[in-house]
Amino acid sequence: RRAPAAFNAGAAWACGVQAAVLPLGVGAGDGAVLAHCGRFAQDNGGCGYVLKPPHLRDQAAGSSAPPSPVRLDLRILAARAVPGLCDAGAFGPVSIAASIWGATSDCARQAYHPVRP
Image (cartoon, rainbow, N blue to C red; front, side):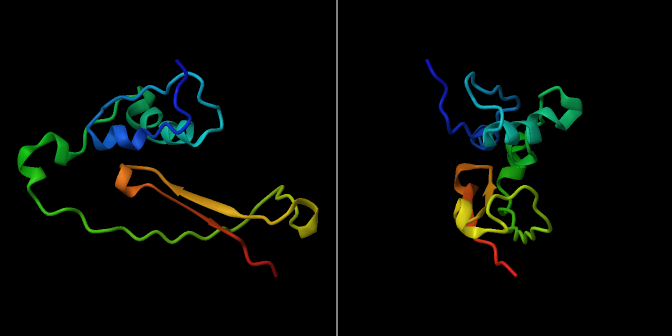
């Protein structure tokens, strides 16, 4: 059976999974691979094991108030090899996409068109 193309390790983390394995057939440059490397492959010495968060380990912690929202401000400082940067008509419009991975309710993706000087 073929692995789903939209594998989201964030859903596994939100349910308390402590180790995740990428399904076969996921592309090397896929966002799922990058999220997996950022969370499971780099934490705890690269062994792939990540301790559950306190609200999933402790019954008393689960009854506390939910954490306050976090605001992210992103600024793109530089870009290289952007097609059409000098000649917008050659490759079409350039856009920048920012994705947030995590629990299903936290996932978001937004595309932006940069302002050209």
